[in-house]
Image (cartoon, rainbow, N blue to C red; front, side, top):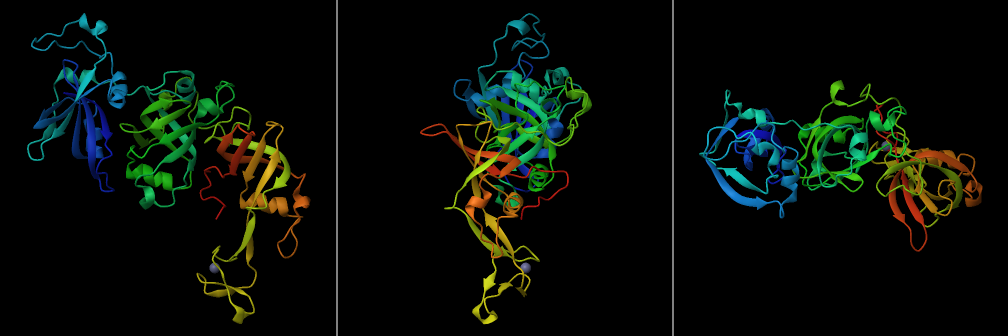
Length: 420
Ligand SMILES: [Zn+2]
């Protein structure tokens, strides 16, 4: 058997190095199988592209194309085979079969017997030539191709993610939205103006992430990831079963047509317009035409540690005290929650609501807020804000056209965000 792909399988996932791995294998006659077994991920990766002998395997299931699309979208990336296949029962490969073979319609799911199961690399067997490494494409090319439901592999830089992952421990059963880009979407000379500057990648709970990748996602710096065998869906990319994410920078040679794989500078976002979809990011500029007073509130935080749960005690004449610092906070910092309505030239008939970050709230209220922290709504009306980087939370067309935005801080090379 040849091992064309080493994958990680979601069932029984644990943080330990031993996980349920999953290998896609192909024999000399072209038959595919998926082997599920307990393995370290690094071992599974070592087997990729090698000829192996598989001993002590048990057939769990025979799956067909109609019922199990996910595995066949992966098999299709390995079809037609790279070398002539053998006909079962004969020794010599049959040349003419190669071009006329229909893609496989069935595949066996195998599991290794706990005591007898064994996979060993065979050095000399030429069957390893069946191996076809994933074809790596740049994001521009992936967006220009219109093959829904097919697999694609690419390198990209993650510039924003939702949710922000502070703790690795909270990640079981997680859904992650990654906003990614690459040099072909960001460089003026490379890019196609009809294409977006960033792209949404949905990482489904079924996609197993290695500890290396989880650590990178929990950090605040932008990271380069290799997305291997992701699925193309409508306007987005989905990482699900059989997709592998690796912490890896692209080699220059694999970024087709691009002169460099480094992003050319600060990341550019698309401006908000009528085509901006939900769960994307965009930049926004506009005039404040209203404040959502029903959701506006403010609270004092410790000026030393940023703790927002201050106690106010009558015996200290109403002064705040911080439990974390064990001291009286004489000059607490006032934090606010503020959502404003904007009049945007790029969306003239649309109600654009933005949940602002502290930094933008402070600059908006710089001259409007009084000593006690209160402010007159009318003093912020007519003020210009932007460009703001925003995540698009909701887009509704009926009964009125509305867009709900949340101002965000992109992952920056500088590290931790200023928003605490
Ligand atoms: Zn404190």
